[in-house]
Amino acid sequence: MSHNSEEHFLDWVKDAHAMEKQAESMLEKMASRLEHYPDLKLRIEQHIVETLEHQTLVQSVIDRYSTSQSVLKDLAGKISAFGQSIGGVMVEDEVVKGAISGHVFEHLEIASYTSLIAAAQHLNDHESADIFSRIREQEIAMADWTLTHLPDVTEQYLIRSATPGVEAKK
Image (tube, rainbow, N blue to C red):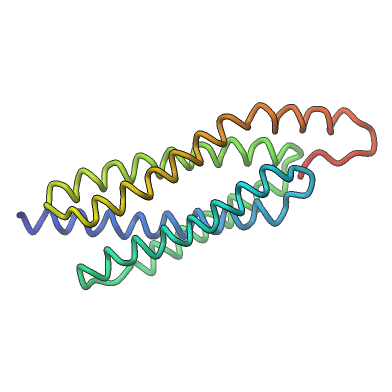
């Protein structure tokens, strides 16, 4: 086992922790703004619970390696998520753009966990590989849900935006 491989792995695990913090922030901001899309809001709230679990699981891997999470990476993720949430406030079609962005972010998470699984297997760390596989399955389920429901969100938005006096944005 190469020390260099372990260092890369730990960097990537810390990146995953920061990514989950960013996901939490983005999801909470989106859920708090949704008023007219109850199915989307409910699924996002369910995924927030999963995301908090992901943070705990990823932290358990960091703890097993007796290292600390990257405070700077977590902070950078929160700043990025805040910027993304503020950007959404400015656009008329924030619900559609938010749903699209959410789908893209799920695929970033899927790719990240796929890489972490391979790295954990390379290091013969089966416990971490199992953790990352469980997380990836939940990310895949969320990505599938967002893709399946994106047409409905888009149609609801278009109907609401075409109706005088009805707010469609959120």
